[in-house]
Length: 221
Image (cartoon, rainbow, N blue to C red):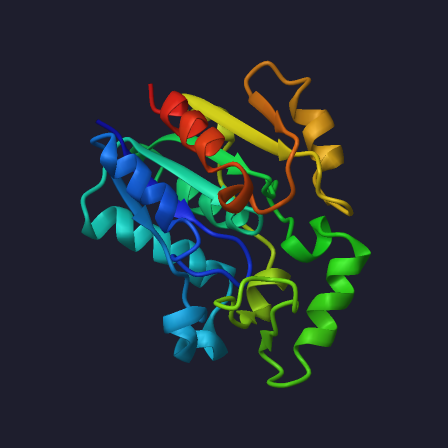
């Protein structure tokens, strides 16, 4: 049986992936749905939270739970986090699943990879506190402010994703304004990637949970 670590995107806590985690557990797997520092019930840590801290959240989970051969899944911003965690502890990671998520190269940030619309949202959303971005009003009511430093900080990587047995990218084609089309076009031409397309919006857990479950279990085989 596999062990999955599920990292949500911006403004979302572990609650987002919990339905998927339950589905994986029902199939006999272990699954952890992560709430990153500065978000949700961990919002009191927002002032000091950045991308490095979010990566450390996942690294600490892998170490303290003694997880081996993990399948890391990141949604949207969560792709930044699983990339950094896998780079820091490659010996504990077996596969990576990017669910409509950023796949950064060394020195890139979410800010640089996002669209102009999202950059404007990041700036405007920090007006209340100066350190956290308020969630867009269209998100789930449970969404909470997200530490702006994590969107701005550039990732530092020491190795290639080719070290890992399997890499999957899920492109959600019905999201108007998606920042991932160019990435999708690039990855689907690379033979080391398994690329999937689902005709749904960005909320994969809400719109295509069964498809996500099947892709995750396939990645663990």
